[in-house]
Length: 351
Image (cartoon, rainbow, N blue to C red; front, side, top):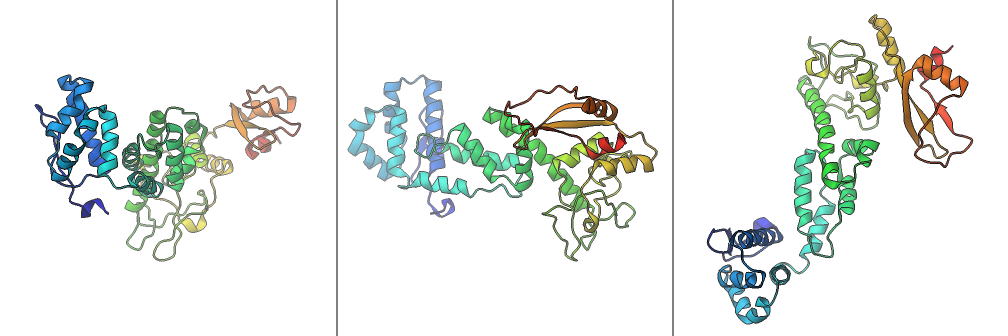
Protein backbone atom coordinates (compact mmCIF):
# COMPACT_ATOMS: atom_id res chain seq x y z
CA UNK A 1 0.00 0.00 0.00
CA UNK A 2 1.32 3.46 -0.87
CA UNK A 3 2.41 5.69 2.00
CA UNK A 4 -0.08 8.36 0.93
CA UNK A 5 -2.99 5.91 1.27
CA UNK A 6 -2.17 4.77 4.80
CA UNK A 7 -3.25 6.24 8.13
CA UNK A 8 0.27 6.68 9.44
CA UNK A 9 1.14 7.40 13.03
CA UNK A 10 2.66 10.69 14.14
CA UNK A 11 6.01 10.77 15.93
CA UNK A 12 6.19 13.24 18.81
CA UNK A 13 9.52 14.13 20.39
CA UNK A 14 9.76 15.70 23.85
CA UNK A 15 12.71 16.57 26.06
CA UNK A 16 11.51 14.95 29.29
CA UNK A 17 10.15 11.65 27.93
CA UNK A 18 11.01 9.16 25.20
CA UNK A 19 9.54 9.78 21.73
CA UNK A 20 5.88 8.87 21.36
CA UNK A 21 3.98 7.19 18.53
CA UNK A 22 0.37 8.34 18.19
CA UNK A 23 -2.37 5.99 16.91
CA UNK A 24 -1.80 4.87 13.34
CA UNK A 25 0.24 2.58 11.14
CA UNK A 26 4.03 2.47 11.02
CA UNK A 27 6.16 2.32 7.88
CA UNK A 28 9.94 1.75 7.57
CA UNK A 29 10.73 5.49 7.52
CA UNK A 30 8.76 6.15 10.72
CA UNK A 31 10.30 3.12 12.42
CA UNK A 32 13.79 4.43 11.65
CA UNK A 33 12.89 7.94 12.84
CA UNK A 34 11.48 6.48 16.06
CA UNK A 35 14.64 4.42 16.67
CA UNK A 36 16.93 7.39 16.04
CA UNK A 37 14.88 9.65 18.31
CA UNK A 38 14.95 7.05 21.11
CA UNK A 39 18.72 6.64 20.85
CA UNK A 40 19.15 10.40 21.03
CA UNK A 41 16.96 10.53 24.13
CA UNK A 42 18.94 7.73 25.81
CA UNK A 43 22.18 9.53 25.07
CA UNK A 44 21.02 12.92 26.31
CA UNK A 45 19.43 11.55 29.49
CA UNK A 46 22.09 8.94 30.20
CA UNK A 47 19.58 6.06 30.30
CA UNK A 48 21.28 2.78 31.15
CA UNK A 49 21.12 0.00 28.57
CA UNK A 50 19.08 -2.30 30.80
CA UNK A 51 16.46 0.42 31.35
CA UNK A 52 16.06 1.66 27.80
CA UNK A 53 13.29 -0.69 26.64
CA UNK A 54 11.36 -0.21 29.90
CA UNK A 55 11.33 3.58 29.41
CA UNK A 56 10.00 3.14 25.87
CA UNK A 57 7.31 0.60 26.81
CA UNK A 58 5.99 2.81 29.60
CA UNK A 59 5.37 6.00 27.61
CA UNK A 60 5.98 5.67 23.84
CA UNK A 61 2.94 3.83 22.47
CA UNK A 62 -0.52 5.40 22.19
CA UNK A 63 -2.09 3.06 19.64
CA UNK A 64 -4.39 0.51 21.35
CA UNK A 65 -2.98 -2.32 19.23
CA UNK A 66 0.57 -1.55 20.35
CA UNK A 67 -0.48 -1.11 23.97
CA UNK A 68 -2.11 -4.57 23.88
CA UNK A 69 1.01 -6.05 22.27
CA UNK A 70 3.16 -4.58 25.04
CA UNK A 71 0.84 -5.84 27.80
CA UNK A 72 0.89 -9.38 26.39
CA UNK A 73 4.67 -9.53 25.91
CA UNK A 74 6.09 -7.10 28.50
CA UNK A 75 8.37 -9.53 30.31
CA UNK A 76 10.00 -10.81 27.11
CA UNK A 77 10.31 -7.31 25.64
CA UNK A 78 11.84 -5.77 28.77
CA UNK A 79 14.55 -8.45 28.76
CA UNK A 80 15.75 -7.33 25.30
CA UNK A 81 18.41 -4.82 24.38
CA UNK A 82 16.93 -1.83 22.58
CA UNK A 83 18.39 -2.81 19.17
CA UNK A 84 16.84 -6.28 19.49
CA UNK A 85 13.56 -4.73 20.60
CA UNK A 86 13.45 -2.59 17.44
CA UNK A 87 13.95 -5.74 15.37
CA UNK A 88 10.97 -7.31 17.10
CA UNK A 89 9.00 -4.06 16.71
CA UNK A 90 9.59 -4.00 12.95
CA UNK A 91 8.71 -7.66 12.64
CA UNK A 92 5.40 -7.04 14.42
CA UNK A 93 4.26 -3.74 12.91
CA UNK A 94 5.73 -3.49 9.43
CA UNK A 95 4.51 -5.36 6.37
CA UNK A 96 5.76 -8.94 6.22
CA UNK A 97 7.98 -8.38 3.17
CA UNK A 98 8.82 -4.72 3.79
CA UNK A 99 12.58 -5.07 3.22
CA UNK A 100 12.01 -6.88 -0.07
CA UNK A 101 9.65 -4.14 -1.19
CA UNK A 102 12.24 -1.46 -0.43
CA UNK A 103 14.91 -3.45 -2.24
CA UNK A 104 12.63 -3.64 -5.27
CA UNK A 105 12.01 0.12 -5.14
CA UNK A 106 15.76 0.76 -5.09
CA UNK A 107 16.22 -1.34 -8.22
CA UNK A 108 14.00 0.99 -10.26
CA UNK A 109 15.22 4.32 -8.84
CA UNK A 110 16.88 5.46 -12.08
CA UNK A 111 18.53 8.88 -11.92
CA UNK A 112 17.19 9.97 -15.31
CA UNK A 113 16.98 13.79 -15.35
CA UNK A 114 17.13 14.29 -11.58
CA UNK A 115 20.22 16.18 -10.26
CA UNK A 116 22.70 13.67 -8.88
CA UNK A 117 22.96 15.07 -5.35
CA UNK A 118 19.20 15.18 -4.84
CA UNK A 119 18.71 11.72 -6.34
CA UNK A 120 21.61 10.13 -4.47
CA UNK A 121 20.49 11.41 -1.06
CA UNK A 122 17.02 9.94 -1.62
CA UNK A 123 18.52 6.65 -2.78
CA UNK A 124 21.05 6.45 0.08
CA UNK A 125 18.45 7.33 2.73
CA UNK A 126 16.14 4.59 1.47
CA UNK A 127 19.00 2.07 1.36
CA UNK A 128 19.73 2.75 5.06
CA UNK A 129 16.28 1.40 5.92
CA UNK A 130 17.64 -2.04 5.02
CA UNK A 131 20.26 -1.95 7.78
CA UNK A 132 20.18 -5.17 9.77
CA UNK A 133 18.09 -7.02 7.17
CA UNK A 134 19.17 -9.71 4.69
CA UNK A 135 18.95 -7.05 1.97
CA UNK A 136 21.48 -4.71 3.60
CA UNK A 137 24.24 -3.66 1.17
CA UNK A 138 27.93 -3.09 1.81
CA UNK A 139 29.55 0.14 0.60
CA UNK A 140 31.02 -1.72 -2.37
CA UNK A 141 27.64 -3.19 -3.32
CA UNK A 142 25.92 0.17 -2.87
CA UNK A 143 28.46 1.91 -5.08
CA UNK A 144 28.00 -0.66 -7.84
CA UNK A 145 24.24 -0.32 -7.46
CA UNK A 146 24.36 3.48 -7.73
CA UNK A 147 26.55 3.29 -10.83
CA UNK A 148 24.07 1.00 -12.58
CA UNK A 149 21.28 3.56 -12.06
CA UNK A 150 23.11 6.69 -13.28
CA UNK A 151 21.96 8.44 -16.43
CA UNK A 152 24.09 7.63 -19.53
CA UNK A 153 26.07 10.89 -19.55
CA UNK A 154 27.07 10.71 -15.89
CA UNK A 155 27.76 6.99 -16.14
CA UNK A 156 30.29 7.64 -18.92
CA UNK A 157 32.05 10.15 -16.65
CA UNK A 158 32.08 7.66 -13.76
CA UNK A 159 34.04 5.21 -15.95
CA UNK A 160 37.08 7.50 -15.88
CA UNK A 161 40.10 6.49 -13.80
CA UNK A 162 39.75 9.55 -11.57
CA UNK A 163 36.43 8.12 -10.34
CA UNK A 164 37.45 4.48 -10.21
CA UNK A 165 40.51 5.22 -8.09
CA UNK A 166 38.35 6.59 -5.24
CA UNK A 167 37.84 3.92 -2.58
CA UNK A 168 35.74 5.66 0.09
CA UNK A 169 31.99 5.71 -0.67
CA UNK A 170 31.50 9.23 0.71
CA UNK A 171 34.39 10.62 -1.36
CA UNK A 172 33.13 8.77 -4.45
CA UNK A 173 29.60 10.14 -4.06
CA UNK A 174 31.02 13.68 -3.79
CA UNK A 175 32.69 13.44 -7.22
CA UNK A 176 29.73 13.01 -9.66
CA UNK A 177 27.95 16.26 -8.69
CA UNK A 178 30.76 18.31 -10.27
CA UNK A 179 30.34 16.59 -13.63
CA UNK A 180 26.56 16.59 -13.21
CA UNK A 181 26.48 20.37 -12.74
CA UNK A 182 28.72 20.89 -15.77
CA UNK A 183 26.44 18.78 -17.97
CA UNK A 184 23.33 20.55 -16.68
CA UNK A 185 24.87 23.99 -17.20
CA UNK A 186 25.41 23.19 -20.86
CA UNK A 187 21.89 21.81 -21.20
CA UNK A 188 20.39 24.89 -19.52
CA UNK A 189 22.30 27.21 -21.82
CA UNK A 190 21.17 25.22 -24.82
CA UNK A 191 17.53 25.50 -23.77
CA UNK A 192 17.85 29.25 -23.10
CA UNK A 193 19.24 29.92 -26.59
CA UNK A 194 16.66 27.91 -28.52
CA UNK A 195 14.28 29.87 -30.73
CA UNK A 196 10.52 29.56 -30.74
CA UNK A 197 10.67 26.63 -33.18
CA UNK A 198 13.40 24.82 -31.31
CA UNK A 199 16.34 26.09 -33.44
CA UNK A 200 19.72 26.79 -31.86
CA UNK A 201 20.37 30.44 -32.56
CA UNK A 202 23.29 32.78 -32.04
CA UNK A 203 23.27 36.19 -30.40
CA UNK A 204 22.32 37.98 -33.61
CA UNK A 205 19.38 35.64 -34.27
CA UNK A 206 21.07 33.70 -37.08
CA UNK A 207 21.51 29.99 -37.04
CA UNK A 208 24.91 28.94 -35.73
CA UNK A 209 26.84 26.69 -38.12
CA UNK A 210 29.88 24.82 -36.93
CA UNK A 211 31.40 21.61 -38.16
CA UNK A 212 33.51 21.11 -35.07
CA UNK A 213 31.12 19.12 -32.89
CA UNK A 214 30.51 15.44 -33.18
CA UNK A 215 27.59 13.53 -34.63
CA UNK A 216 27.12 10.99 -31.86
CA UNK A 217 24.35 8.58 -31.08
CA UNK A 218 21.87 10.05 -28.66
CA UNK A 219 21.49 13.45 -30.34
CA UNK A 220 17.82 14.42 -30.16
CA UNK A 221 15.62 16.17 -32.67
CA UNK A 222 13.54 19.30 -32.28
CA UNK A 223 9.91 19.65 -33.27
CA UNK A 224 10.83 20.55 -36.86
CA UNK A 225 13.19 17.60 -37.26
CA UNK A 226 16.51 19.43 -36.75
CA UNK A 227 19.14 17.46 -34.87
CA UNK A 228 20.14 18.80 -31.47
CA UNK A 229 23.79 18.56 -30.42
CA UNK A 230 24.44 15.97 -27.68
CA UNK A 231 26.62 16.82 -24.65
CA UNK A 232 30.37 16.93 -25.23
CA UNK A 233 32.38 13.84 -24.43
CA UNK A 234 35.22 13.93 -21.90
CA UNK A 235 37.77 13.81 -24.75
CA UNK A 236 36.15 16.77 -26.49
CA UNK A 237 36.13 18.76 -23.25
CA UNK A 238 39.83 18.17 -22.77
CA UNK A 239 40.52 19.15 -26.38
CA UNK A 240 38.61 22.41 -25.98
CA UNK A 241 40.38 23.16 -22.70
CA UNK A 242 43.81 22.56 -24.23
CA UNK A 243 43.10 24.78 -27.24
CA UNK A 244 41.36 27.83 -25.77
CA UNK A 245 37.94 26.53 -26.82
CA UNK A 246 34.38 27.24 -25.77
CA UNK A 247 32.01 24.53 -24.55
CA UNK A 248 29.03 26.40 -25.99
CA UNK A 249 29.90 27.25 -29.60
CA UNK A 250 32.50 24.42 -29.86
CA UNK A 251 35.05 26.76 -31.47
CA UNK A 252 38.81 26.63 -30.85
CA UNK A 253 40.99 29.69 -30.13
CA UNK A 254 37.82 31.78 -30.03
CA UNK A 255 38.91 34.14 -27.26
CA UNK A 256 36.05 33.48 -24.84
CA UNK A 257 34.63 30.78 -22.58
CA UNK A 258 31.12 29.38 -22.11
CA UNK A 259 30.41 31.91 -19.36
CA UNK A 260 30.55 34.86 -21.77
CA UNK A 261 29.74 33.18 -25.09
CA UNK A 262 27.38 35.25 -27.22
CA UNK A 263 26.86 32.46 -29.72
CA UNK A 264 25.07 29.16 -29.33
CA UNK A 265 25.44 25.46 -29.84
CA UNK A 266 26.03 24.53 -33.49
CA UNK A 267 23.47 22.98 -35.81
CA UNK A 268 23.27 19.25 -35.21
CA UNK A 269 22.83 18.39 -38.88
CA UNK A 270 26.49 19.13 -39.65
CA UNK A 271 28.10 17.59 -36.56
CA UNK A 272 31.55 16.06 -36.74
CA UNK A 273 33.53 14.87 -33.77
CA UNK A 274 36.06 17.39 -32.50
CA UNK A 275 39.63 16.49 -33.48
CA UNK A 276 43.08 17.92 -33.07
CA UNK A 277 43.02 18.84 -36.75
CA UNK A 278 39.99 21.06 -36.08
CA UNK A 279 41.99 22.86 -33.41
CA UNK A 280 44.99 23.31 -35.73
CA UNK A 281 42.77 24.64 -38.52
CA UNK A 282 41.18 27.13 -36.12
CA UNK A 283 44.60 28.30 -34.89
CA UNK A 284 45.73 28.95 -38.48
CA UNK A 285 42.48 30.70 -39.35
CA UNK A 286 42.68 33.02 -36.35
CA UNK A 287 46.45 33.54 -36.46
CA UNK A 288 46.94 31.92 -33.06
CA UNK A 289 49.91 29.96 -31.79
CA UNK A 290 48.90 26.31 -31.92
CA UNK A 291 49.30 24.47 -28.61
CA UNK A 292 51.97 21.83 -29.29
CA UNK A 293 51.43 19.94 -26.07
CA UNK A 294 49.95 16.47 -26.57
CA UNK A 295 49.46 13.38 -24.44
CA UNK A 296 50.58 10.00 -25.64
CA UNK A 297 49.65 6.54 -24.42
CA UNK A 298 51.11 3.10 -24.04
CA UNK A 299 48.73 0.24 -24.86
CA UNK A 300 49.03 -3.37 -23.80
CA UNK A 301 47.82 -6.42 -25.68
CA UNK A 302 44.31 -6.08 -24.26
CA UNK A 303 43.94 -2.57 -25.61
CA UNK A 304 44.07 -0.88 -22.21
CA UNK A 305 46.16 2.25 -22.21
CA UNK A 306 47.51 4.82 -19.82
CA UNK A 307 48.56 8.41 -20.40
CA UNK A 308 52.24 8.42 -19.44
CA UNK A 309 53.61 11.80 -20.44
CA UNK A 310 52.95 15.22 -21.88
CA UNK A 311 55.49 16.71 -24.27
CA UNK A 312 55.80 18.84 -27.36
CA UNK A 313 55.29 17.29 -30.77
CA UNK A 314 59.00 17.52 -31.52
CA UNK A 315 59.96 15.87 -28.21
CA UNK A 316 57.52 12.99 -28.67
CA UNK A 317 58.44 12.44 -32.31
CA UNK A 318 62.18 12.34 -31.75
CA UNK A 319 61.88 10.17 -28.63
CA UNK A 320 59.54 7.76 -30.38
CA UNK A 321 61.86 7.34 -33.34
CA UNK A 322 64.88 6.90 -31.08
CA UNK A 323 63.09 4.40 -28.79
CA UNK A 324 64.18 6.25 -25.64
CA UNK A 325 60.82 6.73 -23.88
CA UNK A 326 60.37 5.42 -20.31
CA UNK A 327 56.92 4.41 -18.97
CA UNK A 328 55.24 3.53 -15.72
CA UNK A 329 52.85 0.67 -16.42
CA UNK A 330 49.82 -0.62 -14.54
CA UNK A 331 50.47 -4.17 -15.75
CA UNK A 332 53.51 -6.30 -16.59
CA UNK A 333 51.44 -8.40 -18.97
CA UNK A 334 52.81 -6.79 -22.12
CA UNK A 335 53.27 -8.48 -25.43
CA UNK A 336 55.53 -7.65 -28.39
CA UNK A 337 52.48 -5.95 -29.88
CA UNK A 338 52.72 -3.15 -27.32
CA UNK A 339 52.70 0.05 -29.32
CA UNK A 340 53.05 3.75 -28.84
CA UNK A 341 49.94 5.58 -30.01
CA UNK A 342 50.47 9.20 -31.00
CA UNK A 343 47.85 11.60 -32.40
CA UNK A 344 47.79 11.85 -36.17
CA UNK A 345 48.79 15.47 -35.71
CA UNK A 346 52.15 14.42 -34.28
CA UNK A 347 52.93 12.07 -37.13
CA UNK A 348 51.93 14.61 -39.74
CA UNK A 349 54.12 17.24 -38.10
CA UNK A 350 57.17 15.01 -38.45
CA UNK A 351 56.83 14.83 -42.26
